Image 1 (cartoon, rainbow, N blue to C red):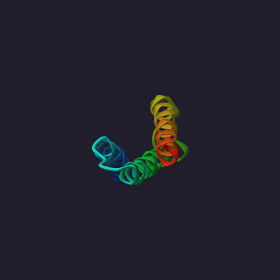
Image 2 (cartoon, rainbow, N blue to C red):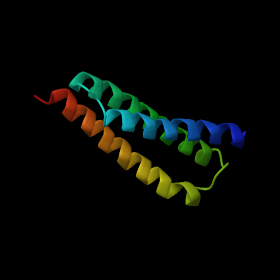
Image 3 (cartoon, one colour):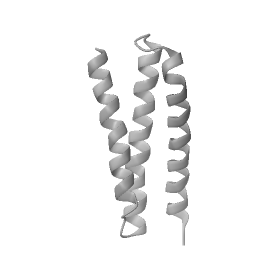
Image 4 (cartoon, one colour):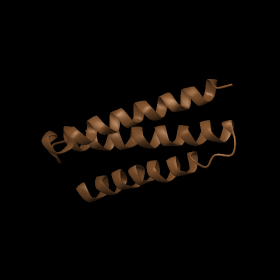
Length: 89
């Protein structure tokens, strides 16, 4: 089960990186906002898998605590960037 959950975490976390890279190359405000939305969704999914692995006892909180903190901070930053992009002139 851990292997399955770990692969899902790997998939969504690498998707964050790939989609953020695409955000940096967005050709329009609309594309920026849309791609940043994908980044936010994938970052939030990474948090979900970290929380599930921790809450189920598969991985200890000691091992995920710093990762969860950073993932939540990054998700907040990405969401704020998306909101700013949506409301930018």
